[in-house]
Image (cartoon, rainbow over all chains, first blue to last red; front, side, top):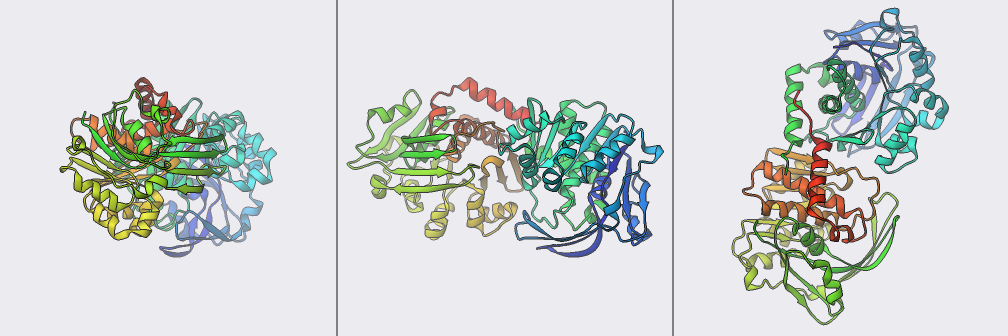
Length: 303
Length: 303
């Protein structure tokens, strides 16, 4: 069980879905990631919040092995985001994004965190992701998420950081955009040529496709009767995935496949309530039971 | 290994995809189904063709255990369809559908076929599907495919035949339309309430979701670098699925899961060339090897 350093956003989210609405709840990629990963391994969180992020907000991290010594507190307002989902939950509209204190964020990795064996760079400016890597001592595994905004806007910086990454975790549309290939097999190969030898493609309700060179592994999403709020599902997946790797001995293809299922398991819980709500009242027995449900959902005998 | 009776269309297809174009090749739901199923069990085909369907066209069935005594030949032209696919292969446009001799088709089940233990009713008018069931002696398993045209146009006849069906095999959009539910878990339950205790939902490049009451089974589609032509993939899936069931001893949940993978295996070949081309030069060793590839793609160890 090795510690994981993660750098990304902690935010206040306001979310509207067909199931309801919440206002100003604690969210952000690094929050979802840390909560999910902390079920498997200790997490070191580096992020920034404003002075409106008080002890009450911070309780989301309570009782979990999440080290907050890298959480910078500065004067001003915390990053805010508001999104609305349409009926089928596959499309959402961003109503506003207020970077606030995040706008001037420069990740400072505390000395105690610099030898972290696992690093997850959540979706932030690729130049900042590079700054993180400059501050850490050759980690065993670097994983990275990014988005269309950086793929379009800062392709050179993104390529520089991709060259130093072991696992890229992105969604299908981003994989297509980054590679210029519609076909996901070709897209994965083109992305591997940019650096990351392992590519994990998140397909939302259609599950996950992982490419490890010649080898592919696919996991469906858990069929759920009610999906309340998809916000953070991708970061929660990444948390379960990297968390599982950090908890495992070695990193064989078999362990990577289990990690995909661990990530899918965590994401399947996240979407069942608004924001991080379901992750906050989750226990390890439920995680183990749903992992086993994934086995029942997918396993079959040889011919 | 029990025989399968299938009733549906044999057609001349003209197909354009980003990979190329073919004209007037032998297609039709019953053709794809029969070829795929014949890898696992003997097939009894009931369909109609015109006098333009000669011995040369009929060679597609050569060398396979497909009994053509139910293939009616009448004066006139064979059913013709022309479709064009767009860049991402997920959308297609029907350029024309000429029913021709299929317009007056009334299925007549030869006496030798009436005791068929497995029946697959391909996508035709539900009143004709009912006529088939009137002519057969209580089969062990009846499976049915249908489409939006009948769901909208002949809902009463469709409900009557659904009440007599053991397995419904349809695509995701049809499942949503038939049930009025967007969520596929709810859609499957609503469909089971109409009769079929087993619902198999085809999701194209996203794989297959099978519902057996409380139990779900999901299989991804095989990641393929080149998809040439998706025409007939759904009927090919159905052929592999029902064919495998007819070849197995019993019909446990485990056998049904293997059948989904057998169907996915056959469909993954079908899309690799135009029309039935790839199915015609397929051998059982290739089928077994790709079934094993599906295992490598999806299997993982317990926690």
